[in-house]
Length: 405
Image 1 (cartoon, rainbow, N blue to C red):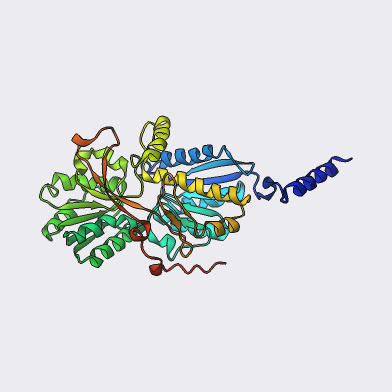
Image 2 (cartoon, rainbow, N blue to C red; image 1 turned 90 degrees about the vertical axis):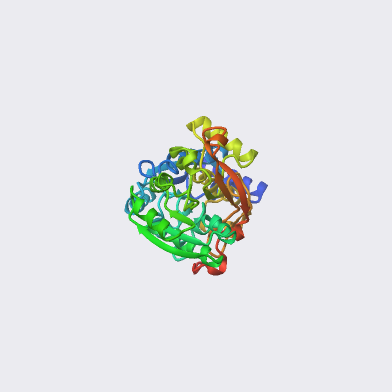
């Protein structure tokens, strides 16, 4: 019997015995390619970069390197926080190699640009690094998920502090997409809880001198200053606030986004007493500590929340592909919409169907003084835990049209 005929008979027997075509036959791609657009060389390289890559590879490793019999490949691009570079490299790799999943995407501006391409080309995408709320509002789409966090969740400490009596706020915000989104979320948190905004400064990015803005905030009678920055700019601002004695004078400092690497860079005493929203912490429970140990053994530092978010994003998409037996993006999207899950990173999570925002439990961490730190990344006391439906903005506030089938 000819070989082609034998193969056809074998396929027929497989269908007869199982009732379905073998799983690998339902996969459209011969390799499941994951494109990671991350910052390997710019200001967010510590909070994303190599750590994001390592956790994505750990997720692939935990899947045995294959999904439905198809090899999984991680392709890494240093996007340098550049929207044009991000889109052009993504398009080039989609055309030359094929892409099944895009993940991370450092920089909110780059993410907004990539979201448009991903939805045009039907590429599943999980945004972990960027915080702008545009990704689940005006820039939402069928194939894209705002996975890691957004600026509404980052405002959790502001809500609590304002309720408890810290009423006068001054905001120093980075003048780009992420900073503007933080300002919008933090301002709403203050006003909705009976507070007053006594001043706002939009600051060019990057910036190394925040002295004028900090002194203006002090002169305005601020009880708290929201420094709506991240990375090196956040460090510069908080270091100067400490040097000027603002914290010693009783003014509270609340960062827009605080990472382990930020505390480590300046030392915990610079940050001591600062409250920040945490979407994840390596020392949260036994499960997080187990993953952190694996990570530390490979990179010799403890992971931050963005790093861990990439493990979860990659793993949950692979899990859906495995369950379905196909990498068809339309089918995967359908099964992800409305999915509830908990894993190492996301606690009590919901992948909202209406706007593709992944809501999850959010924590409040207070930075310990150096005297209370046990190791080189034991920086936070967890002082609060807020369910996802309280931490994130309500679905009714979303402007996502969800105009896809």
